[in-house]
Image 1 (cartoon, rainbow, N blue to C red):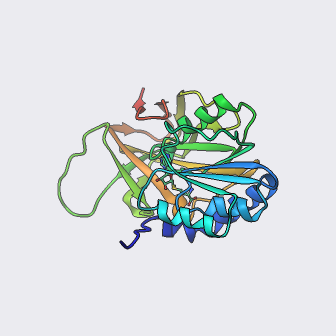
Image 2: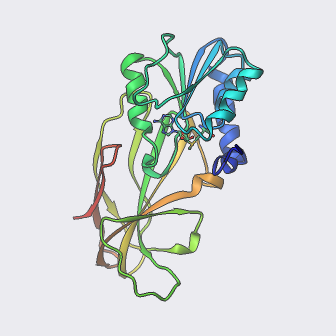
Length: 262
Ligand SMILES: C[S@@+](CC[C@H](N)C(=O)[O-])C[C@H]1O[C@@H](n2cnc3c(N)ncnc32)[C@H](O)[C@@H]1O
């Protein structure tokens, strides 16, 4: 059966991402036990193995992708591929020194990255994690489409955008709403952000996106596959230049991302 590599192809070609992770892994993996959680076709496992990790465990839940990952065992006898859900599967007896968890998405909503890392950290509190932090941004926008259809979007629903720069008009300056530090247990967030309107007009959506800090101080630019973002429909509400808007964001890091204008 042919294997579908799908979006993994774009990640393999994301030079900035791969370079940042490879550098961080090269510094931490030599001689150590590494877990690669959400390993995909295996680039992070490969970086750890070629850096001289003692053993690498690669967890991947997707059965279509897993056969690619498993092939790394041909060249690396110290690689252990696991077709497993990292949230629930029995963990290897050998505890990790380093965890690489590249399950990135806007506000970490696509994959259970925070829950998986919290799980590992409960078992190994001092484990090193790559990436070290996430920076989560919100912005008021006017979402628009060009079909001509007078469609109404229900508040609370959302669209995932992937490199569509004209889908939104920016209505406020973007603001940092939350930072997740993966070097400790990550708690749910409940934060209020004051947004500065750029203009007077009507807002019908909040745009949410995230930057990953792969190693301390190295934040990835939002290029290539890092451009994914969420549009969450609200209101609509009228805003005025000079009059700030308070936005409350709550996120339980599972299904529970909530956004409300106060
Ligand atoms: C953003 S992709 C990154 C893949 C790979 N780490 C890379 O850097 O190319 C996230 C991967 O995590 C996997 N994944 C998501 N949830 C998972 C889970 N609970 N357990 C194991 N793998 C999971 C997905 O199937 C997907 O392959």
